[in-house]
Image (cartoon, rainbow, N blue to C red; front, side):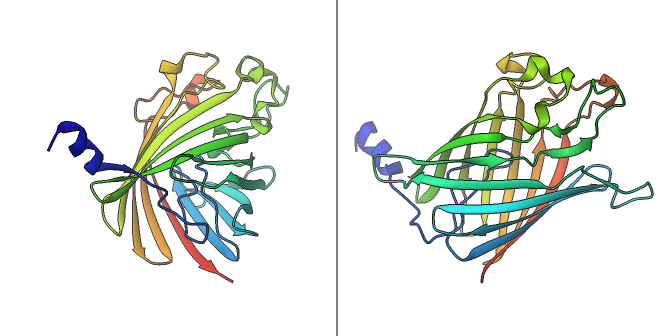
Length: 262
């Protein structure tokens, strides 16, 4: 067998998901073009540093359109005071193009829920309000699936423009479009690996793509309706925020998601 034939046998371009299947809607922070099927919902709970909990509920209104709401509590676990973000986050996604043999899936939407600690506005209005990792705001996602040695392999690209987390005067230099790219590999019928790179062009007061955030994770579908996830956030520790004393190192976070239908 020639090298070309072997490569073709190992990597076959194919649409792996039909419209009524549960597709990956996110990698870690990067939106994919996947959407909840009509009549399905998911409940998500993300646990992060300092006893924080980021919760969400999403509903598939059609096979293309899903909406959701989210809210975050800080200090829920531990001994300090409990606080929440100023207002709930909102979400919608519309899957414009279904994936085919030759074309990727395309989706667009809006997401005002960021991640990590939520900081409220400073008294003089110079800093915040914003999440430690900004909400996506308006976004568009492109996803293409392949079959790699008999297992699904997905590539994803997202472009976004954050609006909610760009209000403070300190964000004037960060009001730019941003891009994230990543991939997920299914190892078997339960376990998937994910990695992504957020270029952070709308953060850190710089447009240097080498100052982006690299995230990786492992997703375990324990049973049909229940998924657990271990994520490693900002592995290269490039995140910078003002004031610098609140910068954090790489964090390990856990997410659980319950999926069902009405």
